[in-house]
Amino acid sequence: ENIESYHGEAIGINVYKGCDVQMSGINVDTVNAGTQLTSDDVDGLTLPNLIPRACAMDIHDETLVTFIDNDDDMVGQNNVNGYDIDNCINNDDDIDDDSNENENGISIIIIAAVIVFVAFCIGILIKYC
Image 1 (cartoon, rainbow, N blue to C red):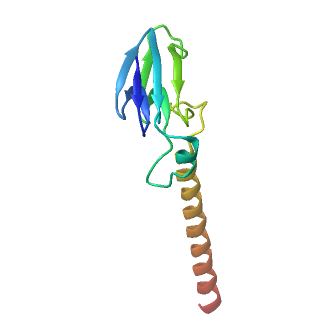
Image 2 (cartoon, rainbow, N blue to C red; image 1 turned 45 degrees about the vertical axis):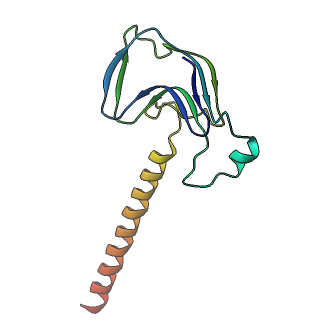
Image 3 (cartoon, one colour; image 1 turned 90 degrees about the horizontal axis):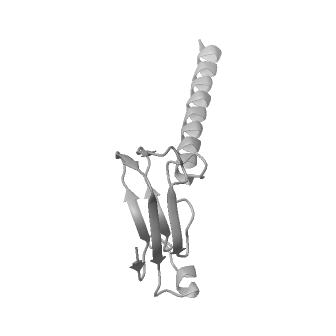
């Protein structure tokens, strides 16, 4: 309750990679990120500075969270404010995780490049042998 970050992200509950937790009756109230920044300040941010993100709960990849009452909507939230409030639950299948899409896309490109290279080598062997 009453979490405030002047210039960065603000997280009510952070569940890190590799955790195995059980939860019930979670309610997060008043999480504010980037409270001392204007919209112009945020628009001017460049990497490595990230847009101030606010999350009631941030669940990282490779994490097991079990809601004791078998209700995935057990996290109540009120007054969660920031310049980016999307994609806080990284391992939820219903939420797009661009990093996973990029990793899969890169893997497909590498596999395709290997296939093309092998086909090229076989073509050269056939032509000159």
